[in-house]
Structure formats: C-alpha cells, structure tokens
Length: 506
Image (cartoon, rainbow, N blue to C red; front, side, top):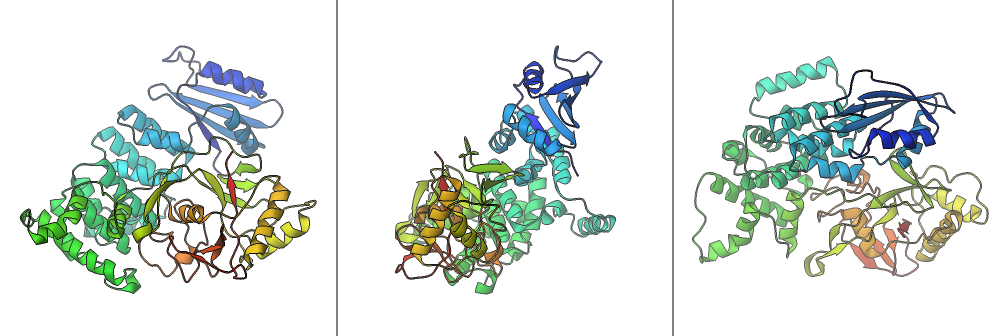
C-alpha cells in the first residue's frame, strides 16, 4: 500500500513546520548532512512520533519549493490526518491554480505535487499540459500522467505499441485515458488553454475523431474549428456524427451535428462563409461565432455548444466542515450515521431549458451521494432518539416514500446528527445533477443506456434511477422516465419518490 502523503504549501518554511510537528509529538531523528542550497532548509529529514510507531519522511526541492511529507508505520493514516489539519498543505483548488498558472515554475510545482499526492482528479489538466509549448512542462506532464494511470501488463504495452505503429497520426495515450469523461475534459481544456493547434494536439484530435464516444467526436469537431487544426481535415470529414437515438442524439441534435461537421470542414478547407448580410449568413452567424470563440448562451443550442466546449471547474473546497461532517479517505461522511456526502461548490451553474434557462450561483452545500436506502431510513427512524452504531451501507435500493415520509426521514437524520438536514430545493437538486457546464444529463449531453449508473460532475450518484427524488415545494426531480437534469414537476403529496438530503454550510 502506498504511503499517505501531504504536500506543504511552498511558503511554509522548514522552521515553521518543525515547530508544528514538535508540538504534535514528532521528534527530528535525522536530516541531510550536505549543506542545503537555501540556508535553514534541509532537503531531507526523518521524524519519528513519540507516541506511535510512525515515521515521517520529508523531502524538499529547493528549485520549485516542493515540500513532500510521506508517512509510514502503524498509525500512518491517523498521523497523516492530524498533520494535515495543522500544516498548511496544497489541496485541490491550490493544485488547480498551479496547473493553470502562466508561470512555468508554478506549473511544474503543480505537476510534481499532483504526482506526489496521486491526485487522479487532476488527470484531465495533466493530460492537457502534455501539449504545453514549454518542453519541460510537456515532458513532465507526460511522465506524471503515466504515473497516475494504473500500471498495465507487458501485453498491454505491446498492444499500445502496435496501435501507435498502425496509426502514427493518432495519440494512443489519449485513446486509452480511463473513461469517456476524461477524454471529453482533455479536449475541453485544449479549447480553453490554446489558441492554435500543433502536431501533438493534432494527434489527439485525430484519435478523438474516431473515438467510440459520440460526444468526444462532436467536441473534437468543435476543437478542430477553434484551434484551426487544418491537418485533421481528412479525419474530420470521415468522423461519424451521431445519427440515431441509440447513439444518444435527439432528432434535433443529430441534424445540428451533421450541419456542424459540414460547416467546420468548409472552414478548415479555406472556403469563405456566405457573404455578410445574406439570409444564409444570418442563420449561420451564431454557429460561426461559437466556432471562433467562447459561446454566448441565450438558447438551448448555444447551451449545448457551451457544454461541449467548457471544462468542468472543480471550484473551491469548503472553507470549513460543518461539525456534523468528517472527511475520511477523500470523501465526506455524516459523523454519526456514516452516510456519505458530496460537495457542490459555490460556482455558477446553468439551470433550466428554453424559456427557463438561467445562470445561478450555488451557495456551496453538501448533498447525499445516493438516495437514502430502506435500511438507512429504518435505522434513522428507530434510532433518532438515541442512536447506537451506524446506519450501515448506503448503496442499497432507495426507500420509496411520500413527501411527508421523506421529510420525516430528513428530520430523523437531523436529530441524530444534531444539524439541519432537509430536502434539496429544485435548484439545488439540479446543480448537484448538472454541474457547472450546463450538460443535459448528469453524465453528459447524449443519451446513454447505462446512464443510471453514472455520477454527475460533483460525484452525485443514482440521480436517474428507478425512482424520482423529492425536492422542496412538493417537486419530484429526475428518475428513469425524466433523466434530464432540468426535469422537475409538481405532484401531489401522496406521490412516491426517494429521499436525498442536503446539508447547508454555515
């Protein structure tokens, strides 16, 4: 098992960190004997904890100011958690800021910190940095990405090598990124970060244009237009746009995708658009603007273009955890029941569709990862006056209940946890399902047969399972029959749905 690690913020001096560790019971056993490049900043140090059989190995890269703390021993995980609270460390928002910095040194620090922390949530940003114009960044990103992708076998390596020889114009690494969402996000970050294509980006686009995922192929067409990737024109002309509901496209969307492919092919071939002022140019104008730069959203088609080209911003972590929550092994759980939560950060979300389309900022809140199961609900209702033990697994089939029963389950859990837990509002439910990029479904912009098993951008699951879910005001949202994130409907209180609770931040 890999040792748990932390990366201290670069501004934290060794002296300051040593004082904190000493106060926590750590003893400096040894440090590097060679003179440090920066006085008072040893590049290696080993601590032992007085009260446990645990060691802390500290390394310092003086060029990038990368400070890595690795824990080993009997209480490695527990001591990791204690030190994490006391020492200022790099976490997701800070890593994202480093990886998107215009300063080469900061980007390199972000890459090496991502590698040390095994932060797979940053894989899409790391993959996009493989095409950075600075050689040191692109090569480091390639190495870090390889370290984040699970190790393969020699047989798998030989298959990749054969694929590369068969298609030297494609990126084999892109084609084998885990999951279509990773591949979609890499393309979106390329659109976001680059003004023009280059040979490495062309290889990614050639792979994306033959990808098995229809949304990846459509986004690749848009990326080719934005980045003026003329060398991918042959592959773009042959790219298979979704032509059926089975491939996830509605009749309106599939007509739009075919027209999009034709317009982009003409632009890359150097054919001028219709003359300004002509009826055909007026009809094409919104699409032409979208192909040349960021999309102004005013209708559903523009929102679709926005969703296909905008990377998901992870947003800030919670400033502080409510007393009822604990963070453990990368997830949040209610302290007494053990039920798992996901964080919806305070960022802008596109909500609604058609006449109801609007942009709303999340207040920042926690939401149940999955609906409350029958077993958890039974436990909560029985134990709310004096809970014993934990609620148990929360991944079972959800409890079907009326609105009043749903509110009773939330109230029982609230008594157990000593904090307000309630049903989400319609907007909160949609934000949890939709994420910040305005997608149609929790998993993306195309219908998928296994959509019910896929999570939203915020990691919220079972949003379109067999039962719709209760929201405040007598609304039912989602469910197998209404998989669109924006679907919500007023129903009678006797209707049946599932319970998904929300915990607001202070």
